[in-house]
Length: 370
Image (cartoon, rainbow, N blue to C red; front, side, top):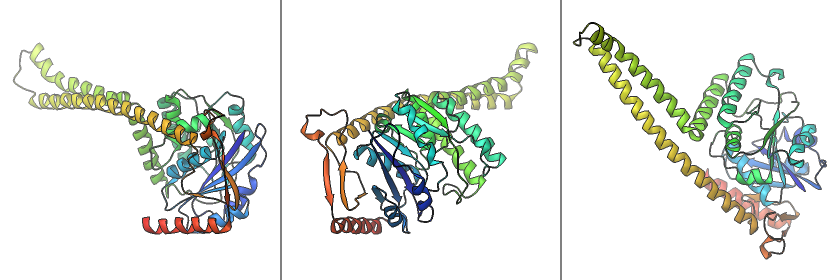
């Protein structure tokens, strides 16, 4: 059993020594524990510091693509490096690494596919009262949308089984936390949570600059994800509200016409009712279209899952991988036949010259894309 702990990074040379120093090298239930960092277009010495502290694997994106893209790149690399379980944690040492054995235990025991570390946001000193309320509200909305019982949906401290990682596809460009839980719930994956401690704040968040920005972006993410995964509920409720509004708008005209026998007045209520009724029909039509799009997205997701399984079976190397001197192994898909030629591990020897050549090529690619 192999555990890979992945750490998305953006200019983290100051935080990495403390963060990596806290990560375990031995975890109950695993024969091998390896560390992977995903450098999301850093401009400092993030990679050099990571190697100094013994990181086993490095994925370097040529430019900053955001946390969600870095997270997805890490999952892809960890799978291709043979991980049976993947733990994701932050580079700012926000989460207590001593909780990793507790985090992976439900997966090792076969009780969960995804485990989320619950920070108990009410007890986090750095969170203001309004942020705590927003966290709790957002978690409630995501629980309703995902049919799960995760109390802290924005926590980035989580563990994925190999199967859950293969099936996960994040499309949101801002954050992976909310969509991945909703997706797991819709796939009927076993989702669990465990209480974890947090460390003192070492730097400000990179995802937002102010509380207003936090509210705006998280509200947008929740709305978009809910509309994508529950289109009939999302648009259908708007359609019902508009229909009820149209009926209420017709009441003055209908009352005067039925009770008093006067059907000449209340032109405004007739116009308003007609507009709201037309809008309700249009929104309901949007609901059906969105539901068809959601069905197509599900088919696409299944196709991507099959492609990922094929890549694992034929030992496709991780994208943007910067090998460390020595050797590394591209892991096999556990579902592939053990006597199959494509199921054999590929061990690649990396010299200093080869590593320098890869880094130079990655640097040139970054210059072309920036």
